[in-house]
Amino acid sequence: MDIQQTMTDIGRAARKASRAMAKADTAAKNRALQLIAAAIRRDAALLTAANQKDLDAARANGLAAALVDRLTLSEKAIATMAEGLEQIAALPDPIGEITNMKYRPSGIQVGQMRVPLGVIGIIYEARPNVTVDAAGLCIKSGNATILRGGSEAIHCNQALAKLVKEGLAGAGLPSEAVQIIETTDRAVVGAMITMPEFIDVIVPRGGKGLIERLMKDSKVPMIKHLDGICHVYIDDKADIAKALPVAFNAKCHRYGTCNTMETLIVARDIAQLVLPELAKLFAEKQVELRADAEAMQILTGYPLLKAATEEDWHTEYLDAILSVKIVSGVDEAIDFINTYSSQHTDSIITEDYSRALQFLREVDSASVMVNASTRFADGFEYGLGAEIGISNDKLHARGPVGLEGLTSVKFVVLGHGEVRV
Image (tube, rainbow, N blue to C red; front, side, top):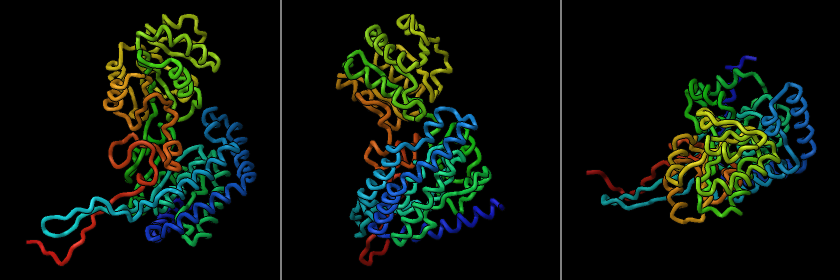
């Protein structure tokens, strides 16, 4: 296979399809999403079988447990994919919306119209649900997309590709609007990130190594996040009945996700009370704790205890490992977070209203929370239907990227024969 020629053909077809999608009416886009959702439910058993082939190969190849977890499509996950598509269909269509119309002294009216980005290339690893989420969001936002999933999920992605194309055809939309790369050749990635004539933006979803490589080599703009170093700060004004389950959930709900807590921060005045109770919970899950000197003294006797190093504060573990830091109060906690956070998601547990507002204002992250688990930083949980990824950049899109993040605006001017003088 000539990868470059193949990708050129795919890119050209995507560009043509993007023009048709930009003109597609809301009813047709929603119909496609509903048909894909119905097909996913209908073929759930086939998807499970395809996923099992991927899981068998992953385990045979020694894939890490966290990646196997990401790869797994449970019955609930399949149902969630279909539900996500139906949520997207129920959302307002952003395309064509005109906002901020204002009269100027010259007599003209100036506003902005929301429009698709064009062609979106998505590169991801070991997560077949991304195939459906990305396809659904791109369809509803009037974009075409080229999806390059990881080789680990090749069987499941191919099965999903058939269902997506079935839905597009049933709604009278071009099948090339969603193209899923079927080869596992890594040269495809190099081609995608150097095709600005065909691809308008790249969304990478994968490990740090992948994203670092794309940042270095891509000629196409990206919507991305590099790390998910998330913090939960338990303030001395916290309600312990809230703090314990929130901190436990933030770490132990799933280890291999970017919105999992990696560092727990506790106010000194409450540390003696909170840490032993949390340690009991973490011990049940065999979570290794890497604590600063002060926390080490409180946690003496914990079976999986190590002294934290400077590197730990910079580390996204994606594993049953948690850093623990004790601070004097909210000001030190905010300073620590802004120093070590990857600007993804950070949460405070407190009953003090002014401290909660201070945390919301001063923590410089894409999602900032009060009395809630960081695991909620997700497009589905935010009511976006799904997400195409999470961005901790500050330009264009930030946080979970849903429909609006896949659009841009253009200025529109309404006149009555005015000329500039």
